[in-house]
Amino acid sequence: MVVKLDTSPLKEWRGYNGRPFLISGPCSAETEDQVLETARQLASLKKISVFRSGIWKPRTRPNSFEGVGYEGLKWLKRVKEETGLLVGTEVANEKHVYEALKYGIDMLWIGARTSVNPFTVQEISNALNGVDVMVLVKNPVNPDLELWIGAIERIAKAGIKRLGAIHRGFSAYEKTSYRNQPNWQLPIELRRRIPDLPLICDPSHISGTREFIHEISQKALDLNYDGLMIESHIDPDNALSDSQQQITPGELNELLSRLILRNPSPTDPRLLDVLGELRQQIDIFDDHLIDLIEQRMKVAETIGRYKKENNITILQSMRWDEIVKRVMIKGKTKGLSPEMVDTIFKAIHQESINHQMRIMNNGIIKE
Ligand code: PEP
Ligand code: MN
Image (cartoon, rainbow, N blue to C red; front, side):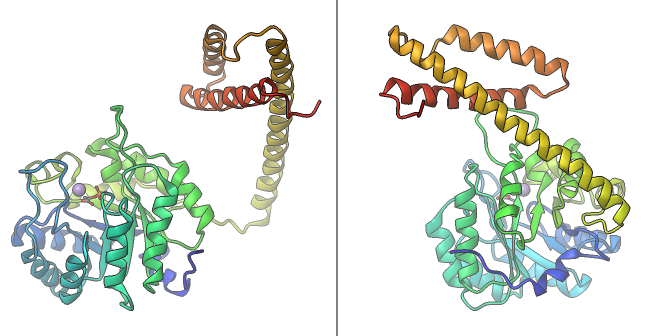
């Protein structure tokens, strides 16, 4: 199924005067005062479209704060009445959906630990059938684009038109400076596959600490995301969940004022001319890259034939190690990131092995 969206409601996604659509609020609703005070301060910024707050919290370990539950829906309703902000919360089963709708919640989001499970997403989709509410689907915790698209398709099938995706990063075993790996290529590919789907970045959950929220937000805007969801709290250090990554509404205001908004679709013909010319150069280099890889594979195939005749294994670990070291050093002198050089050469090496395998197993490759 191809997700088919009615693009007319997309206009409202552009927030204030073509600026990004902003969602903010605490990770969790803790007390009525905390919720209302955060909302009042956010509303006074006049930049936020949706006030977010988790009511039911999916925590990694038991005995952590698991949310205030249904009680919190009343507080969100008050936020809406007092501040005029739209309100949103996370839903993880059909009961959550029914309760949230009963309290007039405007936006529901499906969390990363829920979008990973097709049974649960289908249950939520059934509960949403025929309802007009805004729904945002977070990426699943694992970097599986098909699973993310599958969850979006299930919700689209319920007839939800105001549908969007939230990129919140992916879990990884290795510890890096970010709490969750951004894997930007996944949301970029999502955008290529479903161009009309609004895409929101959640820099708070990618970052895991305050210090990276700005750089991730700027990157998302430079990649032409439609909006940002940033966690905010009146007293972040004492928050009951995600305390390290929350910022005060004042800090949020300061962060937003430092973000640079660039033009996603220039119309000035002179600018387009220059861009067109540069893009032609990029296309020429891409063609060169393909030709070079083809030539490299031909040499690898000759080596494969030689290995076959002399009964040598395909993988010569020392040689591979030598190649990696050589290209890493060379890449560094050219200002290329070691991650990129590593990824590209692993892929090229695998392709060489595949070509040589075909030769070993009786040469399906044409001479
Ligand atoms: C959240 O938004 O507070 C949350 C629990 O997010 P995620 O599903 O991305 O972990
Ligand atoms: Mn959180």
